[in-house]
Image (cartoon, rainbow, N blue to C red):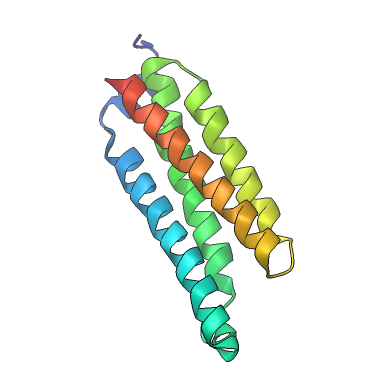
Length: 128
């Protein structure tokens, strides 16, 4: 279903590359979380090596990619579910930033990242 609004024509020029890039970034986030956990378990002093702002910057980039890719999907195919799933995942990721560093933060971040990736995958599939 293609919406014939002026904004839909704008989004037609942007294809599913944003969804694929966003899914790749979600995968990198998963690798980062697991690798950091393993590294912190092995070497407890390694926590100070990374700037804590990397999490806020990563969330900001994820929100930007979500607005572009999932917004394009709504304008193109008209399905809200991919955007809802992705937004729910972004909310969980944002909430995880408020938790103290530890297992709960890692768990909720991984849940959020997985939901964001699922939202982008649903969006990519609905486009075709």
